[in-house]
Amino acid sequence: MSSKTYSSILTLCIAFGITGMVGADELIDATTTLPNAKPGECYAKVVIPAGFKTETEEVLVKEASERIEIIPAKYEWVQEKVLVKEASQKLVSVPATYETVTEQVEVRPESLSWRTSLHGKSPLANPALLEAAKAGGIDLNAATPGTCFHEHLKPARYETKTEQIIQSEATEKVEIIPAKYEWVTEKVLVKEASRKEVATPPVYETITEKVMIEPAKTVWKKGRGLVERIDNSTGEIMCLVEVPAKYKTITKRVVKTPASTKVIEIPAQYKTVKVRKLVSPAQEKRIEIPAKYSTVTKREKVADEQFVWHEIHNNDMDASTRTGNQICLKKIPAKFKTVKRRVVKTPASTKTVEIPAQYKTVKVRKLVSAPQEKRIEIPAKYTTITKRIKVSEQKLEWRSVLCQTNMTPAVISKVQQALKAAGFNPGPVDGMAGSATLRAVDAYQRDKGLARGGLTMDTLKSLGVSI
View 1 (cartoon, one colour):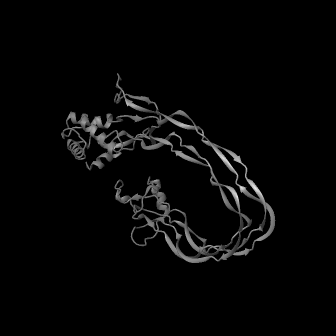
View 2 (tube, one colour):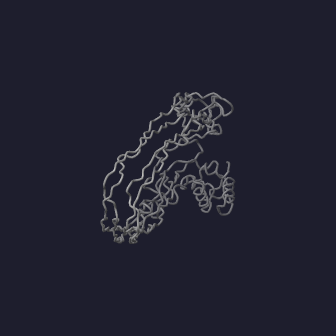
View 3 (cartoon, rainbow, N blue to C red):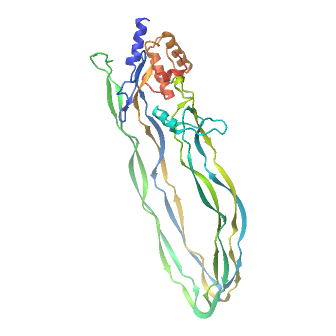
């Protein structure tokens, strides 16, 4: 191997560390302990970037309000019938009507269970194997349906519960109590009361408000300066820079005093006449008929399966360490039962028979149209602002990278060809890990959401390059 090639390997293994900008306000360093490496392996400290999402928010800049217009009352003198005997009513009961409906009732919910296979009615897995898999570093909670591992299972636990299902809804029966009347002398309206309304317009004021669209943060930036190299130091300088929060000033018009009206009352005029007066109106008496129910039994899950295992397509461990057992996460669909019940289609009610009133003709000043207020709505105005919100913290981790034993010009050429095919410019395909190749690797990792800071084995796998 030439000295130039070996120098490029050392650059990747030692100096190809943190690149670009690293947010340090929530930086988690998981690299305080060196990885348990095998002879000939190299590891680099890489940055797992923080996750962000962009949200938009509507901000009020002018509140909604309204404008009031007054439409005055109108009157005219007319010959009018005056009530001397009030109208009455006769109530007739109308019974309720019913109909029968069917519906699907869930008696067993959809569930997931660990099985020994995804095919047919395979048995549940043993929990002792799951605990062993957890101790081995398998996260069963992150498993998706259809995933299989090598080893043990503990079955899910269910309880049988009963539930009351309505078959016939509660209803009621209606009985009629007739009205009672008596002759009395009372005052009769000959000139209606009136009123005059005066509008008071709304009062507004303008206010300004600052809205934060991005919070303050700190970031690591690569710096420059004179640094003495000691032992195996790379001479790298990192500077923590504070980035202030960003704000946007908005102006909005708000209602200080809302629009209103002032009413001036004009009293009514009356005349004394003899009329037949309603003492007590006709009434309806409702008798409740209770609902009817039936009992349905269903099973509910009260404890999930517990597992720890090895995904069947994962070749990190030697096949000779497997016990031959297999567990798979299988989805069991929900179970439903069809039930029928009697429901009220039309509730019980009453039908009113009108008995007309008796009148005599008098001359009165009649209100043609009452004074009215017309409210015209003025809609609110909004502006849209965009915010960037952090959803996960960045961190440092050790990741396996190419080293002296496996970084050959042929491997570097494969990486350059794969980067070029993926649309990232690595410079000339010459088998040398130059600055253009390293920039292309970093751009590819950013685009694919991979850990950055070195040519990791995950990056090689994503590029489809084998060594």
